[in-house]
Image (cartoon, rainbow, N blue to C red; front, top):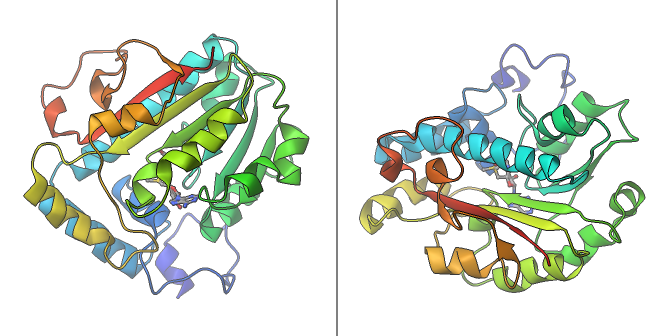
Length: 277
Ligand SMILES: C[S@@+](CC[C@H](N)C(=O)[O-])C[C@H]1O[C@@H](n2cnc3c(N)ncnc32)[C@H](O)[C@@H]1O
């Protein structure tokens, strides 16, 4: 039922949906969009997101804080002179997307967006068409680093002999404990030139494992389940890169550009930004 996409999406999506868009399982990008107040979700996504929000009333705030972290991190990178971005697990493009933030500082910034959800690719291509010299949209899975790093569109847009910022924002908690998340991130780190950067944000259990487990049930019937990791595991994803201050912390406390919300402890997402020497 295409109407379920709601008004406002008409110009971006045709009145039919590509068959690869699966409406039987919740999808992280569409759940996230629902929590952000967007319009690109189906019944199955809303139901799953409601499970999460019932268990952790701060879920919406977490999503908003995550998006704000992405913005601060990209601005920091652009101000540090980075002009190439590989944004993996892009999500549905919205206000404050990576290209928009980066180009406010570096007008020629190039961004390759990578996501495994076809609806993200459909939206991103529609929204970003006409900007192919600065933008690529690639449908690929982070668990296949070689495919991403060797993808013709990525290689055409980004020069890996020069600094590239790899963004994995609210992504790696969709890579399970039974998968080689550390090896996946290492493959990306190894492909980067000195001066490159890595940005990660990741879910934690907030010190309340039972509440966290109840919230994560929202992803039980999703395309990917959500797993949490502790700060030490999140730090380890940065390998020998140099984390900038304040290191890996709860997102509202990461280089805030205003007063830090008093309830920052309810934001169960931690993240950081590091440069390759
Ligand atoms: C919570 S959203 C985060 C969006 C954006 N990075 C942000 O922080 O605002 C997670 C995104 O990661 C994508 N994703 C999840 N697992 C993935 C995988 N294995 N490979 C590529 N993308 C994936 C989802 O489709 C979704 O768009």
